[in-house]
Length: 326
Image 1: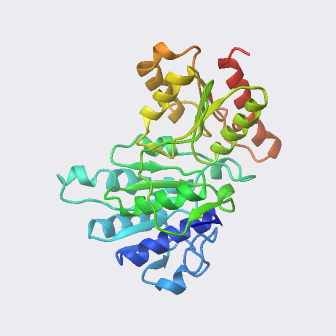
Image 2: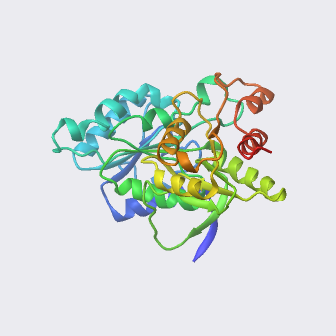
Image 3: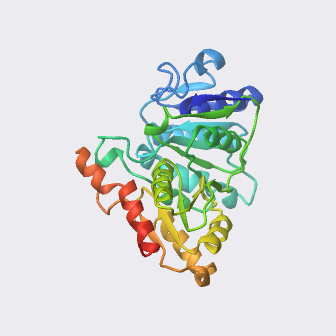
C-alpha cells in the first residue's frame, strides 16, 4: 500500500529499514545526529539507533570519508553524508584512490561496501562554490557506481539497493527536491542500479535526463503534448552504469533525441550518451542529437543569471523543436 511522503522521508525510511535489518550499517557526517541532519534527512535516527550508529563528525570530509572506507574494508557498511557534494572535493582522494580502487588493488581481498550520499547541483542563490554538479566526475571513475534519483519512490528503492551493494556507491540528491512528495509503498522494495525508467511513453522524440532535471524534461514533454508532439521521457536513475539499451531502443522508435543535464557541457553524461547513440543507433536518427546543459560558466548568485545559465523548459523545448525541424 502506497502513501505520499517527502523525498527526505523516503531516504530516511531507506536508512532506517537497512539499519534495522543489518547492524553493520551506520550513518556518519556533519550534523547528522544532534541536529537531525542539515536537511532533516536523518531526523530521529539518533534517538532510535544511538550515537555509535548515527555519528556527528567535525568539518573534515577527508577524515571521515577515510574512516568510512576503513570501516567498510573491515566489514561494516557505512553511509557517509556530505552536506553537499561540493564538499566532497576535499575527500575526493579517499573516494577515488581508496574506495573505488581497493577491490582491484587488493586482488579481490577487500570490498568497500560504502555509500557516499548528499545533495548535488544548484540549490538556489548559493553561487559558484556551492552549486556544482559532479555526477560525470564520479561516473568517470572505474570502481564506483553513481545513482541520481528524481523522486521519492526511486530514492528509497535505490538507496536500499546501494546500502546492500558490495561496491562503493555515490548517491546524489538535491536540496531542491527534499520536500518533494510522491507515492512510496509501505512494503519493502528494491530498485536495481543501472536500470532506466520510462517515465512517459511517446513516439515522436526521446528526452533523456536524471535527477531534478527530470522535472524540466517532464514539463517540456507536457508542453510538447499541447502541440500534438508525443515525447518519450527516460529517467536514467543511475549514470554509472548507464542503461544504454533503454536509450537506444527508444531512439529506434522515435528517431530523435534530446538529453537534458545540469552539468557543464564538456565531457558530460550527455556527451557519453550522444557518442553511444551515434555508434549504435546512427541509422535510426533523423536529426542530430541535441544536448541541453548548463552554460560553460561558474554559476553566479543572482537569480536572473542562474535562470539564464541552467537548463530550463524553454531551452529544452527549443532543442526538441530543433530536432523535429519545427
